[in-house]
Length: 554
Image (tube, rainbow, N blue to C red; front, top):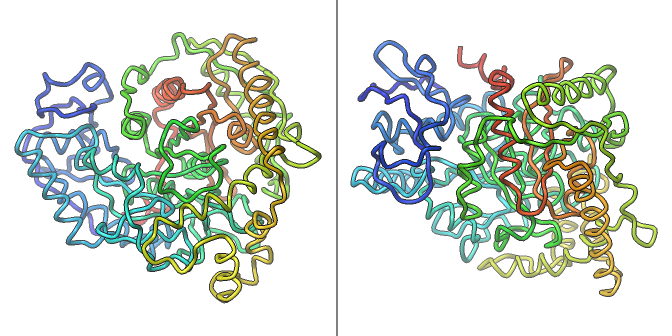
């Protein structure tokens, strides 16, 4: 990508503008939290008498300041981000994070419309005129110029009848959808042991941090892959393809790839954000959430999704926070998922324990060695309870989802399995011998409705009442912090609770990133954001852009 420089048309105010709702772009009209956030670092932007935007580090919050001050327009921004996508999606680092782009003329028209609104004194909110990328399991209707393939050739060319509810919210808030992101096909509900971020349509998403990229034959959550079905959304933000993105999650699909991409991610409480128009897994644990480079950006996008103002959560202070940590030596991820690397597991534990000390030293109440039930305790009738619930829900959910297309060649789960068999050269590569075993398992679901209801009650009671809620009440804490490489997101899914992740460190052996996972109670996304805000303030230099992409700019 050529280095993009823009004339400095106005001296920056040094005050970051960020907020919710319609407003006139004047400083006095902004709530206090807009004006109290981190100011722009001028040295990062000014080169001589011109202004350079570094897509690897700039936040949506900072872009909003530049837009408000007239330093840049949304029309210029979309070209800057399209340049970066062109440089590193299929060329350069070959990240394969973007599966399709909106037509350029439509993007330009949308950007100009939003620029004109701004010039006329109308700004819809903190993300007015900001580019965003959206996971390709979230429906965008035909007029936006992008398919919704879910990574499957069965939906290649099929047109969604209307937008997912959440897409309408994004558009109404004034964002510009640049494109759709690659993913684990069918949001991970296809086969077993397939690496995160692989789809037949999009190929293998690559981590921008891992030196050498995905190693063929690595485990499905191995240290070389981007890890999770929202991989393209997380990688896209880390790689500077957009400042923010949307993902979906049933179990770890936002959290895991966000941690591997050294960005902030959050899954909202199950049931609080409409999932209509998104590829289903199970309503028992499906949700959506934002991915961003900063807690402030995450709060702004989450505010759009949930129609709430999270400004009060961005205190950047540990004062009054109450945090529980577990014993990391009791929590590991199975070797079948991630092969251990000598010294790395111990390094992750050291970083986790050091985080507890840092937080405590900065004024938070910290409880160590809290005891949370293990995933093995979530069995029902001798089998994994949550997997049974997911399989029971999938066929009916998929059939309803497919009704949202004008001309899809498949109408139900049986059609999908048959399509994959008939197009095995595209959909069932030999390297993945269990290429659609999850689909066939769901097709063979024999769980009774009575057992299904009982399993849901069992899971909620175990994970909520005897799990997180027990820790929160017994220790007087608001959040539980866990290592990334364990089954914490599955237990959070069983509870239906919100879960987030912050950057924590990087592996010496290949550069992969890892993070800290934060779980809060039902509807308490604000407490996760409060933790994230204080974490960022305490670790201002911890998150680093992908070295291989930084080097490519030289």
